[in-house]
Length: 492
Figure 1 (cartoon, rainbow, N blue to C red):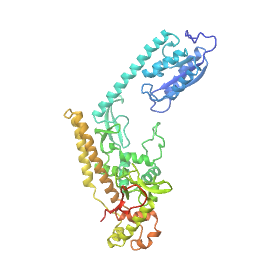
Figure 2: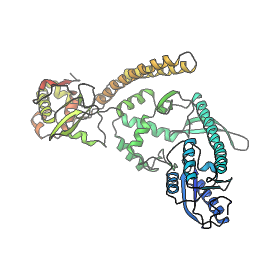
Figure 3: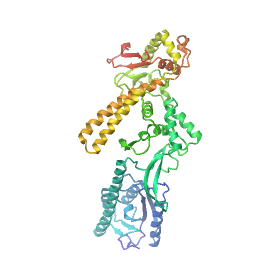
Figure 4: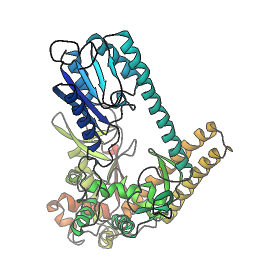
């Protein structure tokens, strides 16, 4: 029995345990399990019966992240359900100063005793006990702060050398420097893993050839190809170690690391030291394709139900894609992003179909349908993006070398990024045009059969003609004005 105030009670103290481990890369919870076992052994040695056990696995106490187990423990203390807390070490329960100070007040109010299997006993009912606890736990906080600084410095050093933080990404493998005993003593760098690198290149090539994300995911799963999450215990919701998802294929295709761009968070941080897996031109094209707001995907089939959703219609104010929404019992085409414009769907569809039918009477229109797929040379556009990205990298390097001030870098970066965004938008339209599928409708009978065509077939025809419909802003009030709908033909 401890010599604390709680232990001198004639009634048995209500004893609980708290265990925490800040990093569990294997996801097995073994570190927490060992702490729990040590706490149980101490309680048994003192003749205590444990009333409840609390734990938090793979959560740092220094980072300030929510700890469900700790929150529940403090709630039970406030409710008067706890007398003694048994921990493995005092550092397992507190690292953050603010959280610790708040907890000290609660523990003092309820006269709690804290007992560590590896450390001292603290009686929070006395000023001396709180003082000793404050001194010891301050060392715990300082230790975490020093470790955090060391980790951040090492990460910054790796970025300066163009190396990634964390394990190698899918498509690469890490080579290590080994000593004579076969132990790792350093990192040589990340090199291409032939098999998974080929899968990355296959994903990009198939997307540019017109395959859907879902189609590629199903095929890779059927073939049993390894996913980026195999062997990982901690995964995002919906990600499966043996099954490819469309979202996974998309992530792989869009990664800036594919063209050897080092990332710090979500921002480019210079050139990486690993080999690129994908040609820069192809990377720019696939990014433009997947980031096209008007792109129809297998998990967005609703856009195929309407004539102008997808890549055919756009907002005449911001250039965004259109969507259909119900307002006051009416279906309206409206701007998908900012709702800049809105127009009655039935009125717009009638107008557009009338214009398309007139256009189809011309011989060159029927020839365009027969022509089907068009190939557009996107190389000049991708070269422009590569040049702009090189300018952005050069500015970052000049800043790193001290030849450019932070103020100048802050002015240059947004301007170049805006230029890149504009060129990428042009590229998205060019890629979409180059991938128009061959039309399944007979060109000779399209006018006669128009009324019986499905929405998908009508969209095929309009896409082959290069139809672009812009919903323009108009005056408020009832009535539909055809002049507020701008119709053009990119193939004319």
